[in-house]
Image (spheres, rainbow, N blue to C red):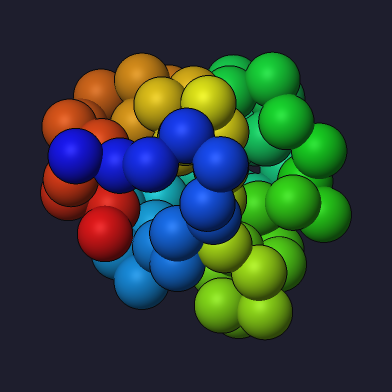
Length: 68
């Protein structure tokens, strides 16, 4: 279970985005987050909060655990 107040690194994000053929900007638009957020998450310089994780997973059509 993912805690609500903690951010979580998403090491699988970039691979799933590339498999879908999306740019960071396109993924950000689909998920409703800034493309700079996608950049930071992919570089692992910050972690995602649960609501961001769910948005990205939905946009990529994967389960949230697949991005962890």
